[in-house]
Amino acid sequence: MQQPITPDADDLTLALALADAADAIALQRYRAVDLVVETKPDLTPVTEADRAIEEALRALLAQARPDDQVLGEEYGGARERRGRQWVIDPIDGTKNYVRGVPVWATLIGLVVDDHATVGVVSAPALGRRWWAARGRGAHGRGPEGERVLRVSAVSAMADASLSISDHVGWPPDRLAALTGAVWRSRAYGDFWSHLLVAEGAVDVAAEPELNLWDVAGLVTIIEEAGGRITGVDGSPVLGAGSGLTTNGRLHDAALALLGA
Ligand code: IPD
Ligand code: CA
Ligand code: CA
Image (tube, rainbow, N blue to C red; front, side):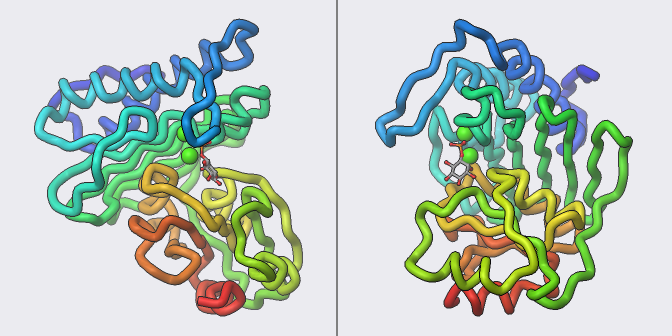
């Protein structure tokens, strides 16, 4: 599946090629018995694969888009509200990656003048990839084939399926209000909660603590699938520090339950 990266490739084609490069590195070290894992100052784990993927993607972007800014989880960068910026989470779900749980992905977003315009999420251990460019729809591919993504039509919270990452970081009672209002709650976790909403398989996903790199690659996919993503306080998601993804119909109700 590896595609050549050429400077004249459009942004989505480039992002898909970056994802191919990331997959190759990530799969080579996944479940390796000698995988090197360190603890970062924020006490979260980082592996040699997280760093190698971000290094490789930065090198490819330096060749293909030398004038663009880059922000990544492992090698930093400041959020740019003007111009073009690639935002990378080399492995979202590092704790899963380390333990051999297949729910992890590389998240690649292109933000132009503070608007997410391209997103690619690649989860090779799940055999899944999701991608979108503004105005061109959202697409997904898995073992069952490729399809255009569309959110669900569920309009009552009592019928809704909710996915979170975990119970940590929520203000008292807010998560309980949400889980108490829905039909079903599961913690599929990380990027997957939000992309299951884009697929129409889940109706609401929420996380109280997220960084820009955790969401930049998701936004275009969710919105092109007809969904809505904001902070849990309803603010624009790129600066929110949290994430609420819904099928759109349930968004205001979810915000109300979260006290926004
Ligand atoms: C984590 C995931 C998770 C979120 C955490 C993040 P990482 O990212 O995005 O969904 O709840 O706050 O740290 O560290 O696995 O890239
Ligand atoms: Ca992440
Ligand atoms: Ca990460």
